Image (cartoon, rainbow, N blue to C red; front, side):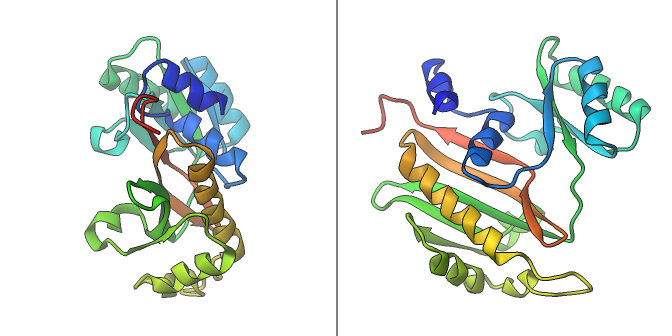
Length: 228
C-alpha cells in the first residue's frame, strides 16, 4: 500500500494517526469522521463540516502518545474553544508548520480495544478486549492467529471476562457483533497482506449506539531490512 511504502522510504517507524485510519478504512473498518488540517482556518472549516462538538489532536508520526503528552483537546463546543485549543496545542507541541486532526466527538458508554501483533513464531495475531483507560489495568484481552473467521471472532467475544459489556445493559442495546467480527477479520488480513506492519493498536474502539468506531489508531512498522 502506498501509505506504508512512503513511510518506509522515509525511514519512519510509525504511521501518523490519520494514515493509520486511512489504512483501517481501506479494509472496511469503521473509523471516526475526521479531517487533516494545517492551520486554524482549516480547523474552523473542518469543524463546521463535521459539526460540533469536536476533538482536536496534534497529528504526526513522531507523536504516538498524545493523551500522556496532553496533545489533544476533547469536547470542543464552538469556534471560540477550538481557536483556544489550537493555540494551546501548537504551543505545547512546539510546531509551527505541523498537522492537526479535527474529529467528530464520539460518545459511547463502552470502550473496547482491538489490534494486531506480529509474533515471531506464529505471525500476525489478532487481539480483542476491554479498552480505554482499563486496557492496561485489567489486561482483559484475547488473541487468535490470523487469518481468523467469523466463528473465531465470536469465540473471542465470549472469552474476555467482561463479555457481558457486549450485550444489552443499562438501557444500551447490544453491540453489533457482526460488524465487530468483520473488523477483527480485517485486522488479520492487514497483517497477512502487509509484512512491514509489525503492530496495530486501535484504542479506544468506542461503541456509538451499537456500532463500534475506531477513534484512535497506532500502526507500528518494521524497516525493510528487518523483515523477511
